[in-house]
Figure 1 (tube, rainbow, N blue to C red):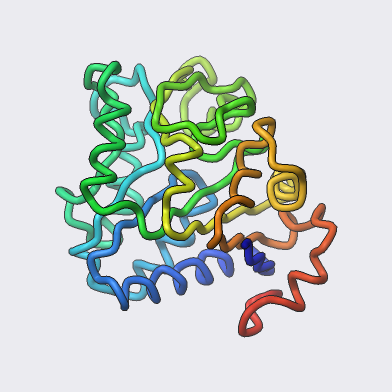
Figure 2 (cartoon, one colour):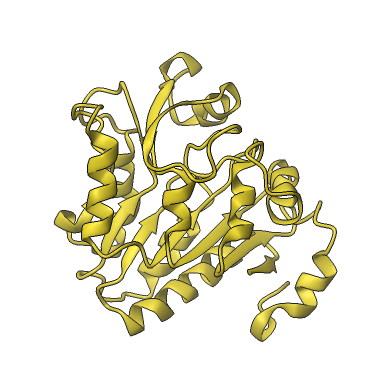
Amino acid sequence: MTDVIIVPHLHAGGAAAATLLAAVLSQKPDMVLGVATGSTPLPIWSALAAMRLDMSRVSAFALDEYLDLPPGHPESYAAVVHREIAVPLGLNPRKVHTPDAQADLRDAPSAYESAIRAAGGIDVQVVGIGRNGHIGFNEPGSSLSGRTHIANLAAQTRRDNARFFESLDQVPTRCITQGVGTILDARRLILVASGRRKADAVAAALEGPVTASVPASALQLHPDVVAIVDEDAASRLSFADHYRMSAPHGDAA
């Protein structure tokens, strides 16, 4: 089932998600954490870093990685995860994983799946959501049971990510991404979303039919999902009042 927590703003959402992660860490210091990049999850990592927890035993796996960027590019997700997550949280670099964009692409997806299995599977996976309903880089039309694979980025996704590059032309067109099926294998999922531009996607994912047209709607099939959304992102939810009344421990706005 999905628990929906509506918070007043993005930073409150980050604090709520960080509290959930800290609780898991207290029970399992060697937890396996699925990390997401982008603007929305940043307050999670900031709030978690401020807790000054010992995360040296944590293993981390990124959702995806761009293809066709030169090694060491600052906007590769290997670089972003290192800079924005691993260093602030004090993660052991040897335990931080992103799909290998420089490897033989015939083998890289299966190698990443094997690495996740070897770590014991992901305990908690943090995911964002795209304006078109994608999770990871699983664009509309992706298989809801798919595994890690090579994918093409939708035009909308490239436009949305162009803010991280000097121009749209520099945004890669291909990636390696965990499949929806891979994401659903995580024991717990935390979806975070912020802003009115995400409102339609959030409503479709949480309250619409489960469909490949909205890959994030597959989260409805998972038994343990917490969706943390700010007021703007929640503005199209039909049952927002119900979620506020049902929020555990007064977590709603």
